[in-house]
Image (cartoon, rainbow, N blue to C red; front, side):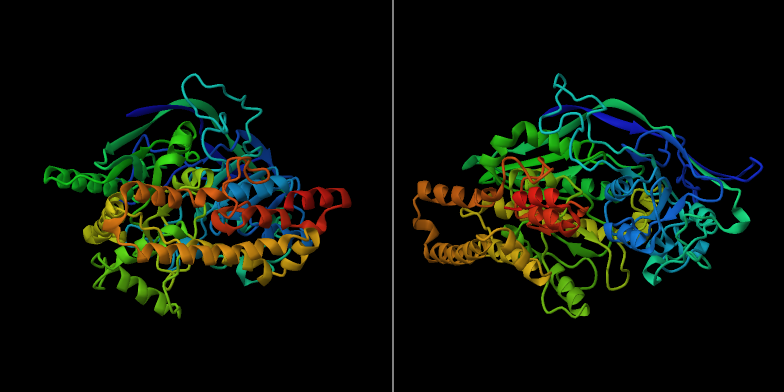
Length: 618
């Protein structure tokens, strides 16, 4: 089945220049990576830009007007304010990492910056040095001209059709009414970033955490330039243009034999910010292999109990457009019929399995890791995971809930369908980095994956084995194998976080019935335990098929209880009250995100604003 989306996109070319006091251009930034081996260069390779950032030309004043904002987090901007460094009217320069790039740009915009420059710092992407033989193509670390492209849109889906499907004849907002960034933003490599940062004066970096890996660089905050560059001005020129394109989703199904109206879904996107060897092609290779295996099983006589749905998404990199628009069009059917959704965006970007997801799926994926041969030296993936966490001085394998950033988001945060995000990523025991170094750059090549990330493609194979077993487990089990007791336990951890960060007393002052929420979660834990025990005591072969259907339906709807029809405050497309991304970092998971977001900076509000905020909390 083909599905058409009309969407608003941005194409771009960047130029960052430094001009001396006599008007001479002394520096011009690169607009794409320097080819380092045959095959790296392509005449049609996309120039580095940030999607949805507007076109614009902004300049600093002579000798001042550029501020280094570390990672561009809320706490970084708060620190600058505390130090008396004013970002307003300046061009902010931030390093990639820690949080979603769209949050960085939004934070800069909210603090009054006129433009933003993003760069990948060697402290995050070249931790073994920046010499030629320390980086790609000899290792997986990023060379100095590597530039991370990516969207800066804070929403999901076509920004011109928020909340409804972007079909060919759908009503669309005007560009002026769309919630898009207002200031220009561009990525550069760390070689170019050095040229700018080394000329900055002002206050020194407040501590070592603000210093990156550019040797000999002070990482001064600005906004002043050093005295010898007092006549210099920095110019940021972007020439982005908004255009509409047609994108397609490709949906394939294997019809279930017993319950054809119950869906077990798997998805991966096809589009990339360049060669995309890891993101998304490693995941695409997996889903194609998984589909081939299922097809072979069918040829041998197997038929799934429930329908398998294979989803190849378009336009994920521009804000999850393909998946979001498809979910918005089919939301009622999906909420009624979906058992689970398995996402495999980037199978191979490192050696360590990472499977954040709904607590309802945690036990199942853990059991399946015990069945799959290890992708490194361990007998199974489970053994490798156990050794990994033991090395981190942890007594058990950690399971986490979902942040945003891939195609599971509309299924989980809009529909309340249990989701799992399956991928292998970096080893934090060796490298404490946000993501793999070549992410969204011109060096994310097949050569990189073949030689430096997954030689022999064992990680790809392990990813497909895990995905295939997970799909069959949920497609064929008569009783859906949810981890019912994990859900309320994890919800309790979310509510307990308010105690740990000292917010519980404040919440009780705001709303006297807050304690009832804690009591109801305890009751939920007891009820889930009783329900699970009753199921264990039943003999599956003796359960009436109608009763079995009723039990499964009851469990399928469980997580949807926490979907708020109107969405979270200010975020109508994020409707999950308990598990959803943080407002301040779309990549990060947050327990009870609506409450957490509303508590942010509560004490800084005036009386009227505080009263309104407290109403929302209630």
